[in-house]
Length: 110
Image (cartoon, rainbow, N blue to C red; front, side, top):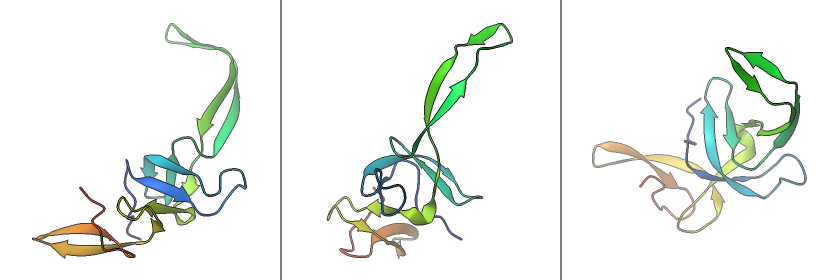
């Protein structure tokens, strides 16, 4: 499957945990093999970290918060022109392929 979401895109969560549903964030990382994306500030999980000493460095103990990945089907790209969560179509313009909003035909790639 062709991944149409890229790092740096603003996306809206359309399904998932109730407290995160409908929120927007920027894509930090795309995992194309597993079809997952990591979104900044969404799907926060806690991990209890114990103190570890490796190669002369010590990792401090405590509770670490991190963003867990979402499946790519749970997010939609937010169009910069109409500000709607929309699907994306690929279109050829001037010899290169660009991403276009399906609702208002605005370019998503800058």
